Image (cartoon, rainbow, N blue to C red; front, side, top):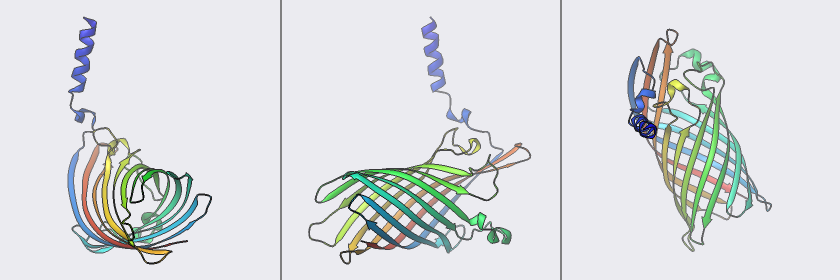
Length: 268
């Protein structure tokens, strides 16, 4: 009898809607943004015979179309990383990124003048496993990333130090005797420490799904060009808490973004 009662209670819990664990928001809004971007960048890489690799990447992004903000410079990313491959099929990376955000429609003059509002600092660590033949390479990368902000925020609404898990799977193709290398990859980005009010149904959530296809064209022994197209599906939950937690506003922001980019790469 006790066992049957326990099973009934367990089954009842399984069928309780997840929304019962979600916060009851005072108001909810939804906003959808469609954008098209142009991206340009360059990469510098230095490899050593002991498996170490130093890498610098500069990435500039501008919206040529944005259904909310209009065309504008969007973001720049300056990344310095150090990689190490103890064996052929595994690589470890650590790095730092300086992120600079462009103007936003909600910024006033005071925010534009304060660097804390538009500068972010990122640190990351990752491990990449790969399997390759003379013609293809399959890779899987797991990366933890922390983005720090130095402006003043409400910790109930946003994280001062936002952690993410980024899972990426890729396929590279090496046509024999050709100077081009087609590739494709897909990446999922999941929050790790979103505040309770920001969580989805009481849980962390996937905030980005990215897919990129491109081709790397070898210009010389040391240099190449990377042409690519990227599609991003983004989902954010913006929280505003007022009146001493008595009024909680939720805005769900969905992004559909198309980007075309080119990167000049120099390795030696």
